[in-house]
Image (cartoon, rainbow, N blue to C red; front, side):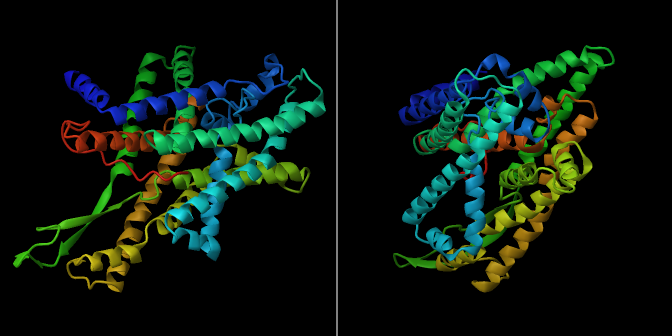
Length: 446
């Protein structure tokens, strides 16, 4: 306890870090307040139908991502999800569109152009999703206090503005605060649903045939093990040994940067949580398209399958998509040719491997081998909530037994703590841990 208090004092003593943390907490508070502000023109007492609709299925996951804003018919009902969808589209296009590939090579100016393109696409996606959300509100029997036409006009404008505001909050946290803003907004929304889910599961265990306190304690023990597994996946690395040639410095032969031996730390899950977010977004597409298609042949069966998050086919497709996206995202995230060139330029080499092309091929081979078990493990963690539901765990609480919710929380918390620890170590304070260091993960801005 004393070490914890000392760590808090050290954090508070660093003015820059203190200001960043306070700014981040303030912006997150604003986001949570906005998630509870109902769209203008809606009678908030008539939202029971929408709340029932979001208790399960994909809409339940979407509602969890927005921290309940979707079910509240909030001005932030669409949250940051359109921005994530836009980012996915841009990253997919970067593989095939030369103009976007060129932006990646232009440094800071290219990054700004790409961000602006993502923002513009976010607005277009939100403008396309907003009418669908409002139509769903009307279908769920929501009562209006203003004329329908005025409600539609105002609703679309407010939803677009809400998403832009959420996107702005995320970018301000990333630039001026601590941690990755977009990821933190998603995490804070997920955490907002945890207390209620926890209490619902606890009370359900004391009902008839609920199993009592013993079953609930067993569930918590299983959840603890799953969290440990998620942390292990996020932090696991494969160290590739690297040696540096001797150099002449000041008339003396000096050893390079790693006098004994350095390592290239290749993460087993280099893609982080992005494959799950990618796959989750793709899973929404069949339902969205077929819902507009109406009575298309076979549409009802496909909608039913992709709405049942505890079903076999949903989880099979979900797991396969995660494995595929893990390879895809790792490939676009880690440039093995660039790594090999950097090593060669700095006089480094992998023992037994020729510098240059062979080094790049070796790193690529190692990366492919460790990505396979990493992607499979990631897919297993992602579908664990379905097994929890089969074990009669409350659906809302089951989301935390793996899946997107748990992995996002673990990844974001580790990454944020890593940034805080970096500030502490840079000012010659002790780190957050008594021994070792927090590895975290390379958080990508959605």
